[in-house]
Image 1: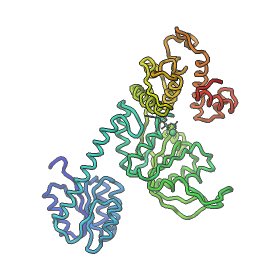
Image 2 (image 1 turned 180 degrees about the vertical axis):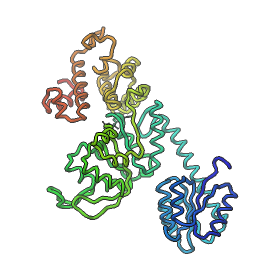
Image 3 (image 1 turned 120 degrees about the vertical axis):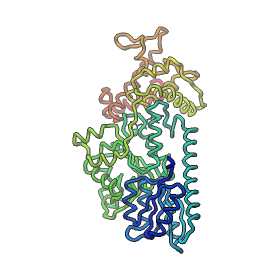
Image 4 (image 1 turned 90 degrees about the vertical axis):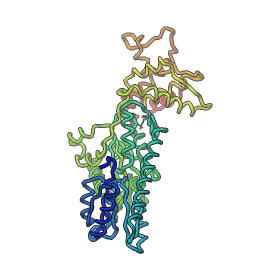
Length: 464
Ligand SMILES: Nc1ncnc2c1ncn2[C@@H]1O[C@H](COP(=O)(O)OP(=O)(O)OP(=O)(O)O)[C@@H](O)[C@H]1O
Ligand SMILES: [Mg+2]
């Protein structure tokens, strides 16, 4: 049997017709299985990934529409062809809206069916070839703003493209600044849902009491202050993608409610008993180790398994230093173009070496910040150099003395250096507290307002 022979399932309760078609399709090189009922078809679909399903719409028991729905839900790429009775074109049109490739009307000639089948296969082949070529040309080292050429990132791109075609729930984990949100957006934008919304909700940024209403919406008077009825993020993401960031911070009560959404695709607005059904793809992200949180009893195990259908792990930058030159180039280009007037800036090799030797606790976000700062400090120059990089990067210099203070041969600009140290420490403090300015200020023994002022001034690069 040819290796690329297509596996086909034909579903019809009229045995003579079904058997005749199966035999002739077999003659044309298809590997054919038959199902005489909807139930039988569902059982076969759950065991095997057919390339093609041909089903009569009218079946006793589980009907053809349900078979079609199950087939497409499980295998979004399956080619489904519908057989309809005379005068039921409306049903056929509905089936096509549902995702069927084409239909034939009974009674039909075998050749008509074969023609419909072959053109659907041809269309599918062209479409996937095009998608492949496009991805080769445009996205050799990037998808949707995610840049990288290390093996780890290439594997990631491949994985993202594969999962984008499905509607499966995805759990993205990775340290802060590794690009979790960017990856989630990339999945949405390469998915069949791209025409609909990508809705992001950061579970750690909203007080627990408001998070539920934010997620599910609420009706008027559901709680103090609920003056009107409001859609939640879930509803806003209908037919699209909901990105649940920092899902590990959800309270047990909300975890239970989210579990129900994942299992039943339904929920109620806060204060309402009317059940709303939605079609939404959920991508969750976390910087903490959820498996460990499950082991510690801090996260529901059942929810973890529902979220972790497809795990996507973003590698830390220190494990893929080879991506740094490409990322630097990407950020210099992007940020240089945003300046007025636009600038074309490169980076010296020595500066690149410094960057590649760094440990990157804040990952790509930190690299982006450093490039941005260097660009500001380089003023009119066409090349960014070591001196523009800021103190975190100076510290790895071999010239560092026992105190870790760096003092170059040619001297330095003391004020700018101190400002760089300040900015670096404030950023690290913010990183450690996940952006919480009150806690970050406490770590630095500053007032919150002082920290905010300093940060604003230093990021602008203007003197005190
Ligand atoms: N591979 C990459 N290529 C280009 N830019 C990237 C890449 N990874 C991250 N970035 C940039 O770094 C910054 C941080 O990315 P993102 O917000 O997606 O990270 P995150 O993992 O969600 O971080 P956090 O856990 O802190 O929320 C963004 O500005 C993003 O554009
Ligand atoms: Mg994020």
